[in-house]
Amino acid sequence: MHRHDLDLIAAYASGDLDDETRAQELIATCDVCRSEYSLHTAVLSELTGLEQPLLTGAEKSSLHRDIWTELRAGAPSSPAAARRTAPLWYRWSAAAAGLFLVVGLLAVLTNRSADNGFESLGDDLTTNEPAAEDGAGRTSADAQGELDAGAVDTTAAAGSEEPLVPDGSPPSAGGEDASTYLASIEQFRESPPAPITSFSSAAVAEEAADCLEDAGLEGQRTIGEVDDDTPYLLVVPDDMPFEADSPITVVDSATCQVVHVDTPPE
Amino acid sequence: MTDSELVARVVEGDHEAFETVMRAHENRVFSVCLRIMGDRERALDATQETFLTVFRKAGQFKGEAALGTWIYRISVNTCYDQIRKAKRRGAEPLPDYLDPSDPAAEEEMESAAIRPEIQRALLDIPDEFRTAVVLCDIEGLAMAEVGRILGVPVGTVKSRVFRGRRMLANRLGNRTP
Image (cartoon, rainbow over all chains, first blue to last red; front, side):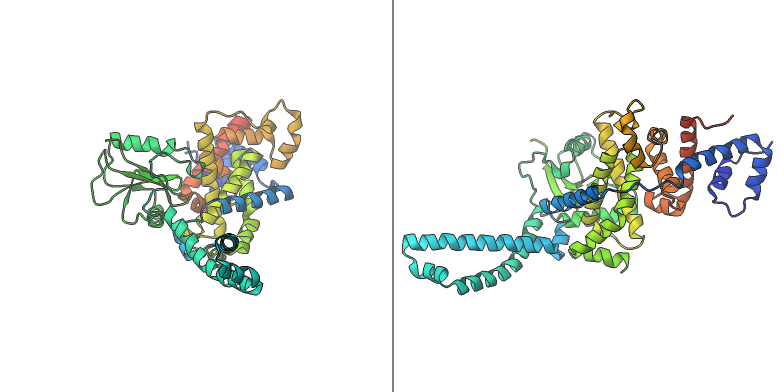
């Protein structure tokens, strides 16, 4: 009576063995092993060599359009990424918005000067078209730089210590249900976890630390288990033991932005 | 251009670089999502979400693994995420094309390039076994790479693939006495 090495048979069916002798012997002499071999080859015959399903042209166009729409509508990948590099389209669209603002202001000032007697200013701006264009050109170049900074500032504000929702009400960050983290918060307050946070790997721990840094929460610590699939990081100040009434900051692990600050009612 | 250089350009804000990444990997991502999710619309949603995550996390790509491996990992996690969300919402009916009583689903079946009864059986086995079978047996990836994608040892991949096949065989009635 031999041991049915079914995994050996399965590997043989997959073509993964360097030495197939033992597997072949088992299949030749053992009904159970032969049955196992038939099973795997039958399943593999259904699964291997299939044509890869392809996106249609319309689906590709729609996919790309929806992705860029989503990216333009949301914040850049992270405040740190925005500080380092805003995407070119973002800088140009921000610059265009700035130019629009400047032109709008000029129009307002022109109208006001006409109404309020600031004619010299209005005349300079309205009669001297090349100057206006130059002004617009110089201003747009300055605006681009400022708007880069402004865009960065805006984004940085999103990731700053100031929460996005000061009143503490749960926002709809990234479409994820707020109950996902509210339930965890309630659980932690009922039973404060030990100070050690569990990460599924060193890489995940490093990613979480980077995310906290991006969110402006460097040095604070997460509570609860964190793995690749964790949608939110729950963060508490590192300089105090976590207790039932400690503030908990919720960070979206995809965007690394603060989405909620939870303080228990007094 | 290496994967790292391409991703660095994405991080720098190079629109074309990200388009290049999408064009190079979108069919593969869609294929995996379709096999795991079993539904074209959900697979399209998962594909979109995968690339959004790729863009957002591009700064975290270290170049230690191939870009394709990294993207596969994101797509698998995205599918798991969406499956979990669907489960939280409650059991959802089979997609029409998997409904045996719907003959009009022929086109959908052909687009998945897999027999409906196979896809039904795949959807019927645990997510981690299905994913391992999809990546190894259908997508044809080496077990070592699947291990890197899933973040598990090769032995675990083998175990999941072999058990997944046995479960499929049971559901398909292929097990011979």
